[in-house]
Image (cartoon, rainbow, N blue to C red):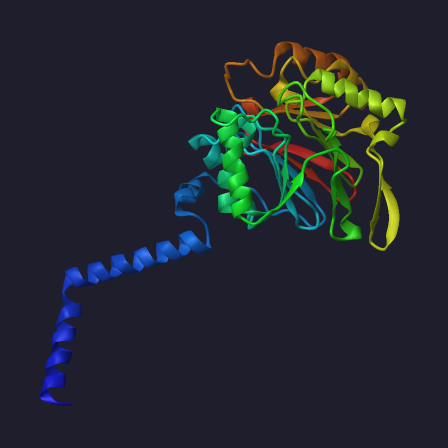
Length: 352
């Protein structure tokens, strides 16, 4: 090595021996790693949610699990289907506490990308948290609600606009949440399906709650009905349509697995019911409860909420019509998990 080359080598070694230099290099490396993680893994602003992961065992073979996540006064439901697909229904109000609960729960379940995301209606306590979910995990398909009442500049309108922007940015297929839209399992041996029972696309509605998507989900003979914030009048319309047509109003012929068959929700054999509008007195009416007679009713509400959800009248009505039903409440128990086996047996437990 020449004298000049040896001199440069000594200078370089001396440079890297300086503590300040090593600190600067380490910081630069951390910045590079952070930028890569933020772009390729998940936004670092959501990293704090990793400290809010509940302890949840891995889903068993052939099991479907439904999680009613405690987001305070709001709604968020996550379904893990037996073929490995996943779905989120509503995403809480977007507050720091609710966001940490939702994202932490998703991390605990090992979610990578949601197959389906549904916003039942544009109220902010259902919509505002979904923009963060989509930014963090994305989705293959997003079901959009009726937007007649999402006024620009309002809290609900801004929440919906952020949700829609996030859905478009993540490249999801956008579909309307309306009657007869459905999805099926990828494999016949793990057959499940969900089907929208409302709203009808051509019908007019009084407000956002009135236009809530109503969803039927079924696996191994166990069914779940989610009604968003639909009021009793919408429930009654659903019941009338079902009874007057002997269920034919919601029967949908499909072609899958090389054969033709019909999706036919049996409302009178409902297993699980997520109480409408957080247990408001204006939902979970007598007609719906009397027709469906669910075995288990889940209430999603915030502890000590100012609306007093679930209402005493609603609880009394449920207990009067369904004296043998089990009642589960997120305001008392936190998040709630339903596990459905391939044989149709199911269990319900609180998630600590």
